[in-house]
Length: 444
Image 1: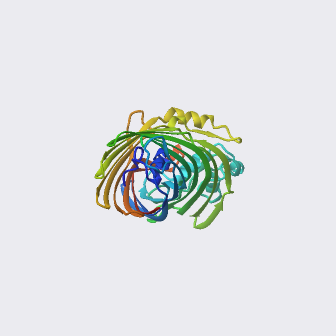
Image 2 (image 1 turned 90 degrees about the vertical axis):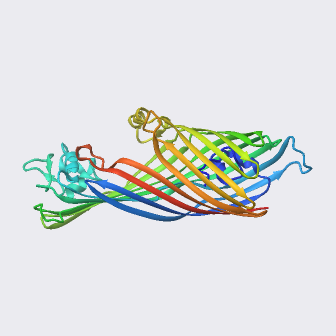
Image 3 (image 1 turned 90 degrees about the horizontal axis):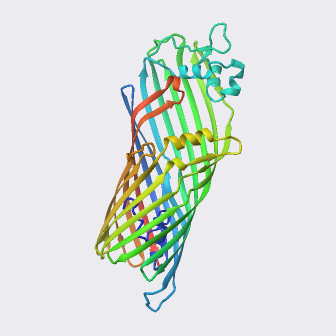
């Protein structure tokens, strides 16, 4: 509910994935669990047709345990006062989403893209050169060789006006198992380190159809192109952090995240079916698989927290990420061209998180706001933003918090097919994702 602005606050399990020095603020043991409900809503605009879709998912925001070891129990406020250990899981990102795009196209077809893709390749070689797209189109007569030709292709689309539909569904998440250590020196300096073991599970299914529902295209009735991609893997990173209490009312924090080193595996398959020349055709590709490594950029975070006694607080984080330093690598493929493309087209950017909390007796009310810069712009440009609100109550040994987060993002050009010869693009794809979370915690 604080917009993720935990960098200078501490005593919250989520801070282990932001500024691990936050664990040093604990003076008792804690068990925490956060079930969450996630709902994403997308709205697209394609060829003048607006389409809306949504996806609902239940998950866990975090599960964790913190053990606090008080070193000096005689009440001294000098020296190393406590050493803490924490272990658990923080959910970092949800891939749950469904996008629906629909429109009537009077100027092109995805078949044009397949024909262009196959151009110059003998039809007997398509199964080797383009097994997941153009060869399927060839097998299902979405494209066919031009009369007397073996490597030039045309389509059955004598004219256009077909209804195009795409439903793209993503599932999975990115989470991080955290093992953290922290220490408190004289209630002034708080230090912490987190070993992060992130894991990725991502699945994409794209179902694309074209239908001559008006019966105006001779020889063509319909076609369906189905693509499936699964990405899975894990990685490793290290986070270091410090928080310094300048005065009772102000704290400053700093954290450094090393690059995350991922080992990932992609598996993909596609199939196509059609009804052309009043006959049904179908074809399926082989299953593709590829292993590679991904190195993500390092992060640097600066934070400040302003504490109004027991009444409330205001917190702010600034996070810098240089996306141009991301790199792909594989023993089976040289990613030099892709890595150069990342370096040339991605840039460093900042993310800002703001949060506030105000208390009355055992009750608290919270609000937050976060903006995330676009990695594609040399100047600061907002890529997406999050608004959050929440409330909770806390007793000596138990606390419960509720939060609602609403994320807004915008994609000007959502590509249905990536072949530049017949690019089909949905304009103004807007996504709104809401999460409702309940946190239950026990301290002893």
